[in-house]
Length: 243
Image 1 (cartoon, rainbow, N blue to C red):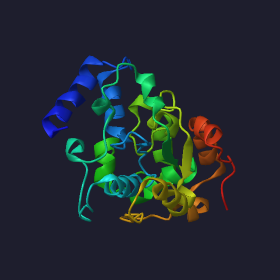
Image 2: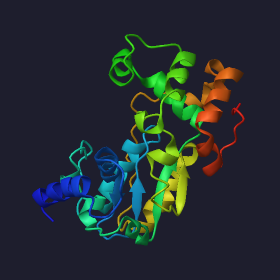
Image 3: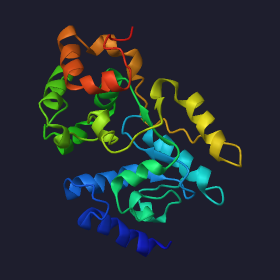
Image 4: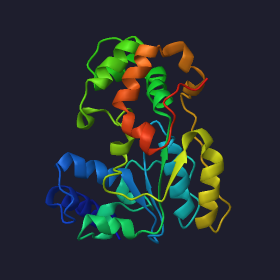
């Protein structure tokens, strides 16, 4: 499948909705760019921002490639990368994507995921995604996030259930960010003939999970529990703040 054909397929999927996904063009585009399918159609991975998605993408692209990819390889241009998009599958009904035998994603405790973005983002990030001229206090940031509708939310803090399309994809497994390397190594060993290589990316690592007590008050935690209630419940995270 050549890159031009993949590009045309991408725009056809987003504009014409041949699989009957429904919703807006923006939602279909986001879906097509978020979902990664192996060339053999034996596994599916959906990225979730602030859940090691760069590590996952680079590791899995290298896993399925015919030859080892360079460390600097970037898959921003999806139609040149080994992993496929939903539009490459020629779906005629969106639920057929669940015929792929193994579907997984990485999820994270909502408390630490939200704090991770806050700690790692620079002032220009806030100007770009929220419109504030300076980095707000954490409580103010949480208020801004919790006032947004799901579709308005930036993917770096969008409710994970919606960010990875749990209303469309019936997942077989959720890897926990908190135990990522062990779980990812086990999955990669199932599909790779070569030794599994996890291409870990630790840029701007915030260690948010160890700093929760310094940023969360009971009032802030209550707002996050309410906004991300479906994440706590669906992915089995306790609403108690980790100590």
